[in-house]
Image 1 (spheres, rainbow, N blue to C red):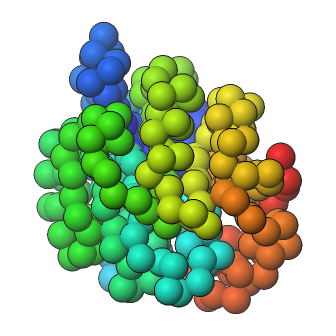
Image 2: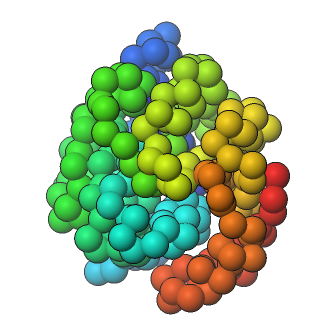
Length: 253
């Protein structure tokens, strides 16, 4: 499958790689860069992970993807599933928000995993790492999760998109893997309307966190999802997430 991308204004945001269901696409270009004291992982020219060593700081899109964890009561934060792990930026944010939660991360590309272990301290995050295809994981793993973060993309920077199976079979399988009262989060760029339609069966409210200066719109759904102001209060209540509030606009979809 692919990893998530934070898309910069001129190109788009987080991304990933082809899944086994998208075998016609060439193997992506994966590289490590060091920029202003941070380490970043780039996949086909877009930023897939960012980390500043010595802390949990990462980019605003990945914090936005992790932030619905705060809407769950502490006893409900038992297990999170991250589809499109890349080098672990969302995992790092989830771990900072709840040090005890079980985290399962699915990443297709062994080279991404190798670089994440070497440059991003992936093994220190205490996650269960699955190196394989996200669709196959959803088809065969029977566990249920309180938070599912879908951060899957394929293609190079200027044509990045969701894999073809995601809006149909993918979201039907995601719904089966979600515990009652849990939340599903998606990193969207061009396909937010399709994602919103796929999310409708999860509950009667969908909220987006639109990231200023990026193309990313982080979309959240789930039964009994509160209004955007409740998420804003939750973000404001934590030092790690309060800093992203000036960068996002919360809207009901």
